[in-house]
Amino acid sequence: MADKATEIKVATFNVSMESSNYLARGEAGDNTVLAKILTRGDNPQVKNIAAIIQRVRPDVLLLNEFDYIAKPESGIKAFIKNYLNQPQHGSEAIDYPYFYYATVNTGQPSPFDLDNDGEATGVGADAWGYGFYPGQYGMVILSRYPIDNAKVRTFQHFKWRDMPDFMPTTKQDGSPWYSAEAWQQMPLSSKSHWDVPLIINGKTVHLLASHPTPPVFDGPENRNGIRNHDEIRFWLDYLSPATASYIYDDNGNKGGLADDRRFVLLGDLNASADGDGDAINSAIKALVSHRRINQNFTPASKGAAENTPDLTHARYHTASWRMRADYVLASDFGFSIKDGGVFWPAKDEADYPLVGTRGASSDHRLVWLKLEISAE
Image (cartoon, rainbow, N blue to C red):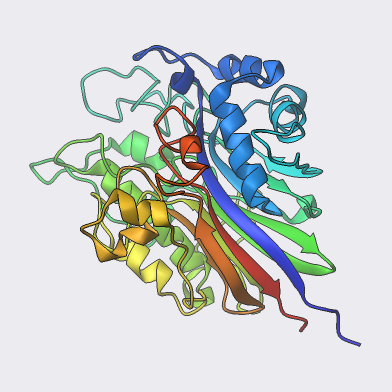
């Protein structure tokens, strides 16, 4: 007898839980800043983030911009115990018995002058991914379902030069932006790319998680816009077996994701297929229209439509600065989409204060899909 179908709710949320969010402007801090906040359990912004998560109640959740803290008791376990396990603003507590996190490239010092300002500082734009300490702007996955840790694939150290037809970054005279030595070591991913398999009632669902660099904060060379494009293009190739043979993970295993696999691709991709923002949007347009992506539903909200009333597609925006930046994209194989949304209440709704200001929670909104896993 075939297994009964299972409904799961999958979400992504850029929570802005990195140290500079809690310090005076210009201060960088380190990951001990977040660790102290998580231990205390009383930070208003984090309590609001927990309340949003408790309102939506996703079964699986990717958090972007959650600082990497090596010891889980000081990091993700403290967040679960001291915030999510505590009722917030009238919501019922929620628990996640499984989680996954790993190192990222943000704040990892390079010995090179990557921004060509004449000084190799090892931090900020001279780190392998923009950041002032290792693990700033990290990622973590929370799940009600077991994680197949033995089959997790990470691509933190995949070299950008090994992507066929990478988009080159050049100076105004046409010469390469990065030195030959730096380019040999330059990772593609500004944080990391993860393929994290979950086991849900005996079926495997691959979470494809990432957080490409914002396509701004650079110069005429557009080095961040180009990197953002190629970080997104990585997923296009990963989902296309004919073009995935060049890909290798951090354990040296090669190839992409086979066609007969369920997946949810999610994260803050910092790019809009609708032309909003500064990204080179050819990669994100190709991704959202990829043959393996279910295109029957796009999460939306009243709050986003209200935030930019002059744009008809604004209801799909996921960031306060008027762009669809955050995505939950389900595979066409193995799922049907039952519902979805963006947690962005309108101004006259009771939950609006949870998102009403930048400091209330985040400049991004939680995005979710309810999926039925087909019984095949």
